[in-house]
Image (cartoon, rainbow, N blue to C red; front, side, top):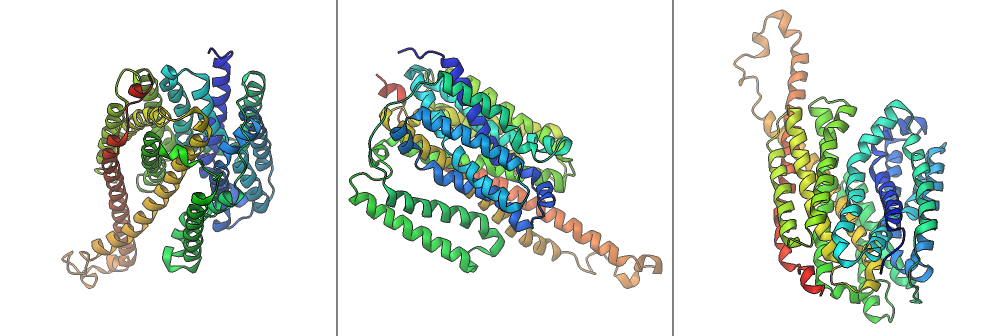
Length: 496
């Protein structure tokens, strides 16, 4: 059945997706400016990011239930209006306490935007156009994290850090009007809300996010704080599992997890989340601290990654129903692995052309994975589970990103120390063939400065090796994910 105003609905949905995903990373480069303006400590300012991520992750869970109870259009409108209003409040915040509060509210309202956008695009398009629809949706999801640091750096550099949030105002108003005027409503359901299930899952998600955010700062399992988070998370997960088996109306419908394509896709999107944002977390400091690129140049050199993703999605959206999606996913995995292998061969100087080439290839590969995966995930799933499954899909991607960032940063810090100790073993007064006492008086007086420069260079080389080890680790993660393709069923065979 034809849906009127499909193009305008798609445009409104895309704006909502980009707006929400962009705010996950756009504030990163503005943190130093915000810290001084809000008189915050280093630990306090990180909560500007953490509070948004945790709130968004937790409130993603009830999206399916709210859409069924109150209607997808109503939830979409309230989420868009709330997200726009809290963006204004973030831009006007005068203290760190107010900023963290507004970011929590912003994450709560914005959590439903991405999963509802995905479910709506699947509903307003016929099955044969699901590939193209997921390509459009994927552009917003994948481009947001990639362009966020670039746009945030530009706004902070030439205007003010507050514009990082205020830029959402025109986008939010346009999105709200488009959804209000053109979006059709969905069917309602009267499934009761499982309060205990939501509470226990909230504890699980919150404990994981807090463990990932705080672990690196307090020494992971050596700190009682992290052990407490782990104990709460494990206990809550056990209680949720027992409760789900006994409840007549569990929080998440067990029936949707019987769909093999959905479950396999959740594993896949977890790995995609790891690679997407972990690479984005590693490259900017690598380019700035080791190669000396200015912030704006870093954003410019990373832009081809987004262009590669957009190009791949435009191509793969047309191929999804002509070529086996499993072949497209394997091709994307191969391109991503090759780009990470090339990045593992970087040095302390990398030509801009190589940064552009590897970034574009990796973005192209991720685009080839994301679109067919988003299509296959719902190919054999009953339509009534789409909103609920979309919220789990988005949550899994975000959890993969959080775990990926924490993992690569922890490995990076550990390897930096190991590499520095290893390289320092070969620098002794005897390895140079000349001790300080043998130097002329004018040079001997500067030996301390020379040793400081030498230590700085050792640290630089140790950091370079640590970054390259992280790139190689992610390459092996991509290769390890490849066999999961065998669990997927081709949707064309199930669509008849």
